[in-house]
Length: 550
Image 1 (tube, helix red, strand yellow):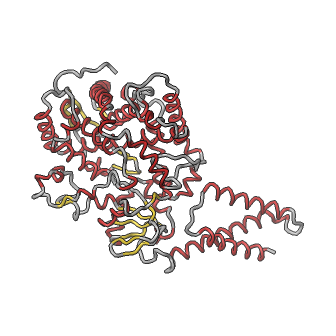
Image 2: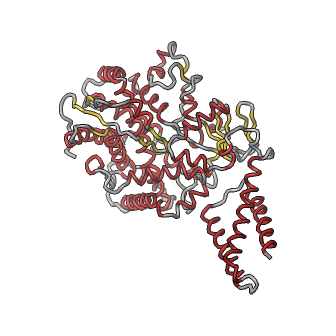
Image 3: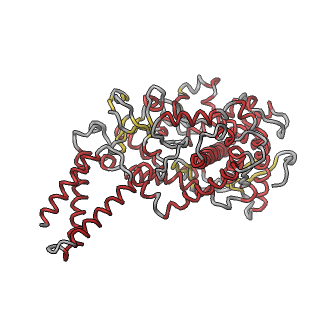
């Protein structure tokens, strides 16, 4: 009888592979079905007189044979010449499983690993069973409107509870377009003009925060990243909730663990999410509690804002999202997380890296200060964004920090009919991704010194010396249907904070600071982790800041 059971289990394993090959499967549902099937088999065998004594052994062995049969079938197909991506070279482990990508993503050095693979295998590299990385200008087609490529399952919302939110993958493109249209009403010059007073107030508080934290520190150093991080969350709390929910992290710190929960959520989503079925399982396990806690905090904050009876002093994001009452409350909860995390995390790390690069090359810091002082005589006066845009080096510093500090990984699914990259055909339903970091340091796009911080390459007057500055190769905000809706706000905030800090604060790195060690410790897992904190000495330039004590 065992032979019959095992033969049937082996055949069923092959049938499972045939049925599920190149189809998305929910990991939590599949795991539950697998263990339920094993339990059902065990109890069935116990009812048979001839096998009741061996029920446990037979059921485990049968499930093992079934599993091995399905795995062997899967592996054989993925390595076979009949696989649609057989013509694309790549490491054996990448062709076998997406777990390789999940592992190197979790370590924070995915961009470096993929860059090494391109150096070895060429322009196109198979980095997963059904995923190809493209290191070529042709990769811009992936994110173009003409490419019409949808987000991959790596953007699935954890839990599969049917929410519609701007960041996550939607069942139909129309839902994303409709939600983006709602968000876009705020992200205009007119809409953002009402945000300026809150941005100015929070930035003055940042200056006071830098001084106070240094004074309270035993070694008279301040963690610059943490200060920028708390500024960004405080500001985004105003931006999203109109002041009804004030984080006040510059005053109180992150007492509720909002930052930790957000970072853990992004790390898990950007690493385990590369193996979507595994994220489905992880979402049900205890170590995802930080992600659930972040959801609970966002729910509370959003409900507080929705229940408010007073009219906010300006139209915050919630006012736009709730204007016509068409967005369900559960969607608003997730949109709150998306807005706060996206607006806070990327902004604060870009500010941190911009200051790191200028502090290690002080000539740029002094040049930027002199350019700012030519336009803004009063360092505490207004900083209109249209005037900040006229400072040549300011946007150049921001763009160069983005180029070297945002190796984003944005996978898409090839649409019907397939696509061609550098004369190689990639079939439909394949996941493709631009090797953003490789393109942003490619000598073909940026020369000379592509690995060096040289903001002058972005200034048109320097085009004779820095002839190779392919501005379109910078993909920090993506493009096409899924381009970042908050790009204008991000640049406005980056300009404002950098200008105010440079005009009002002298900074210096402590003795013994090793720039290369710091740079080697920059990890990117959608969020950016600094293994070595950026500790600095600060000293106020000029008069005291006119702001209430925080």
